[in-house]
Length: 526
Image 1: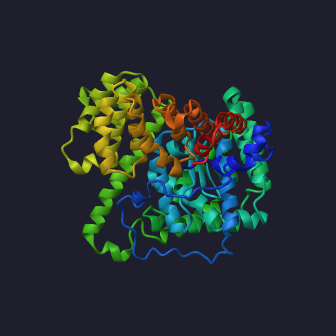
Image 2: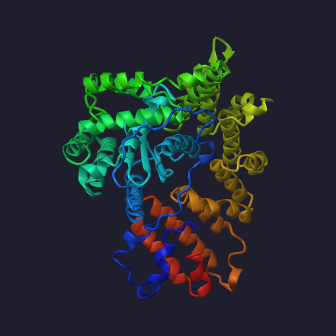
Image 3: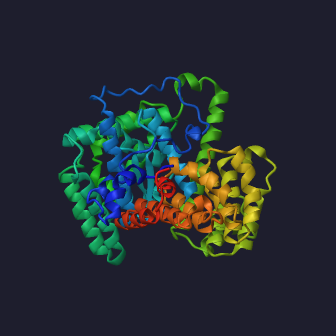
């Protein structure tokens, strides 16, 4: 399985037996990257066509990094991921994560970049996003909620990924340096202080960002223009509207004139009137979605319009779910949207948001009542659409929260067979199996996920629940310590990926101490 400790456990056993934890162990653990797999890559194109003449017109790059350098970058990205989770509040919703991961992988594929290593969504109202060499992308909820359409988000991410593709960090620094990550730490310190004192937090964030601009992260004007140009090409090749990048930059610039503090994105990527004009002219060179040759086929044009309307509806649904999960809305407001002048809304975004709000308030019967119209659709295509899938997903969430796991399992098992690539469904189904004491069935779902999604703490949390509820661990291999070893190793992984490295090491040491025979020691590295 994807066990970050397995590469060091065997070599450290003797030191551990004497109570000695190597000083470098915290640096070694997790340094061996797993085989990267795209999250939801089968849906990366999102059923949208890509223009036939959308070849990426990018300048030849410097020599591509060696495998060793790529591994080092992956380690750095994972270290930043752990730091973010340790210091900032994150939105760890599987459905939102998969939706955004699919969008990012769609751009990555066109950029020739490896699939996403990890996506972290930070609960912060500031408008910001950044990408780290090695495959980490971080997005603030403020950016997702400020966007007027999905392509706005795609534009910001395409710009950030263009910087990675063109290796602007290395050109600027000559090599990867720790200054980049220290600067990111300053941003996180500002977020944390801002929760206690908004003025102090803003000042710290502003100070750290100013340091970034003057030092490592202030890309040159030529690099910014190149990232704009490459980013727009990536957008067009991925099926997004290049105009959206310039549109969103314009929105940010106008907002900055009325704000006390500039959004972080503007501080690290200054948008001058000249740059905005260049972006407008550059975007005008591209068709909004299809090439002129493709537009000759009117039926394809109509299909494109339907697809884009559907994509925008899905983005509204995503924003509504974020608003509920980050407490940016309330029941009164959502009920007013649901019932206007005695008429009940049929807008799926409204229905799903109100359902989530009722669920958060444990008003399960109300949640089921509002969700029912989306579950009773006889349209098979709708049932398998992202909207239909989310309705089923939320129905199962309600059942599990309402202590009705058998109902959730009956709903999820057919969907898991039809949509095997949808890992959020697998996580929910595993929860249902755990609640009904079907531990082996839960482990069959979770252990493969730990190979591909091992950077998500929830995977290890569920595996720990499996170990805690296991009825056969004590008798397995004739060792009463087997269950405790499993609990400790899964708990250690969970703490490690939440940035609690010291605690993870303590838990691992306890597991090794309990593993008093070869069979149990092998469990720690299987």
